[in-house]
Image (tube, rainbow, N blue to C red):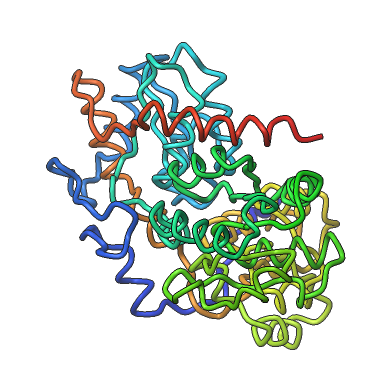
Length: 394
């Protein structure tokens, strides 16, 4: 009997990818602050044992959530894994846990705080773990956009739909204006609901998910979509363009999924004959149109679980997940490669590393609450309203 060896993905690290694995604050990140404590050295050989000991000491007081894009060194300590909304719901289902340690990014921890009880404390191991996509839509910018829509005489017929990958402020805006939240799994249902409420949709903050869902799933044309650029007067659009559009897409994107190109798809098909191309709907429209399968992280995992032995797959999503899946299914003879030749880590997800997790757990075990994420009551109320509208979708 032979033991399957972990697969090496055909990627080369870029200087940027290596830089993004450091511990310094990223000035472009959502919160961009340093960890306010002394981190253990990443070379400490006892880190794993220290994490286990601290978690054992905390017992049922702590519940650790691990997003699919987290490093393996962190994911091994997660009580549950999943996408952002699944994890927030998992946290809400554990009312006995005093501490919810969210190994993800800031907006995810905010969602967990919104959905958990008042006596529960949500902790983010590194406050600089933000989200570039969430950064692309601030409360001030979105309020200005709504003023533009009001001046154009269309605000009353526009329904906002905000992607889960947005700040609590944006979710609250959505709730205040009669809109709903969506995930990459239920975006089609969310848009169908929105068009039953109004004539147009303002989709925040990921233009690609909005466009792909409208065109691929609802049968709209690309001409039905316009892109609102918050850095230009009036969003860079004329009143006629705003009035004529069905989908007003915010000019935002995922820095990871936006890297994949049509050339990436063509290249992998030439390199790996018979390959199935499976991508996330946050990818650009031409990439999605050229792929064989499109779906959320949960969809990607389930598709590979159901794939026949010996099948070949090129995956267009974050590298930590792709590498984990390649190793997981190697024993079944499934060949899984990364869609792009260059390393494509999610930089802010990678800020949650083992030293940060150990520091967090040891601090909590000693009775010191660190890095709590807390959404104010008014924001929470309106954001929760938008989330509840999503939960009520058929």
